[in-house]
Length: 275
Image 1: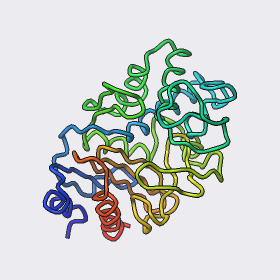
Image 2: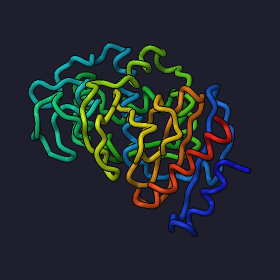
Image 3: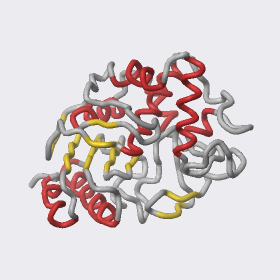
């Protein structure tokens, strides 16, 4: 039985009008698809993975360093990528705590980060993202009409290419990706929007690292070494290096109680079938 076939029941079970998904192997092979792979969806915070990856390219190009001052006084590029710069979720220009003291998931921090890259490179962030990530990967159906924190639009087919890159990087060196998925500023607790408090709330450079814990959106069967992100529009992308797998799922119903039930079950099925 297909590991992804259950998404066809989500409309009846959860009122999710449209869903599409893919499972990708470590070598980039597409193991299974379900739903319309070329349908465009809003990514919400899955956008942060694309934005973060553009910064990894910028790090290798030496356009920025993790230690560059950016954001509120005392904060750096590293703080912004790891949600420890001191901004609130959407706090405007005002910090709510000192950098490095708390993990506060922040759209504001990612937007400041994109502005910083545009300033130091002289290239607007949307163009940099396209030149550094989207065009090289052939992601022609992906665009950034909105915020670099939550405003991208894409298809499962395009994100299949990105998932394959995360499993076996070509645009950046493997040590750079390893650095990005390592937990930065470990030990900080915080709240994962829509799911509650995690202690610690682990984050890399743009990548969430709380997988395998009770209450997580991908359930408890997924290995703790997984990384990825979910979006409030009902989207997620996870990568498990231990299993050599990635899964992308895009839908058009906002994250909610249905996601907390459907997504762990879907991940469990994928891991049973391919892990």
